[in-house]
Length: 262
Image (cartoon, rainbow, N blue to C red; front, side, top):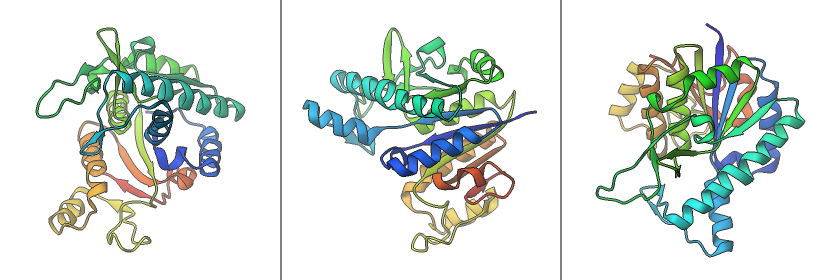
């Protein structure tokens, strides 16, 4: 099967113009089929403050009330998404900015209210993805650029970008050899959280479980690792966690980040 790169970038890339410019240049230069998923939470918070919309979080997740939903739809689906697409077009990368509502690409379920009411937030699974349309776009050499928004029952829904990346990766793993890449602010998963150079180059399941038992991982990396292994178990060939500045290396055979496999 052909290779497919599904790459997620977060605020640490979007908030640094020079880092973002290099990342987009590197992303545009990837010859194989590719998909970009972006966040934008810090930008939404900044613009929300200017508009008098307060940001509220529980367990690191944004509470999305009606005003916040309007805000993130404007910022994620408009400002951030279209700026990225324009920059990629400048780099001769035929990008198409989308949300889950466009072409019914990702149809979600509004998260039910339990202990916490997260508001207008979408939950998704690989079955939520319009795989046929995505496959068609990729075969037309079109590069989808996803804002972290889905839809249900005529409403836009705020949806975690890491989750969107993982779900799309699983959905397309039947058609491609998928490498899912999470770009963040460190060089990879660290064996020692106090040593920035202690990157684990290849984290297989046995080593992961051994280090997990020793509580060697920082709390912030644990959700990414859990998502990574869930994706691997569901058919994704490889997951890589690394620095956005190492993207070219991390789309090759010799990676700089942490490559996660079974």
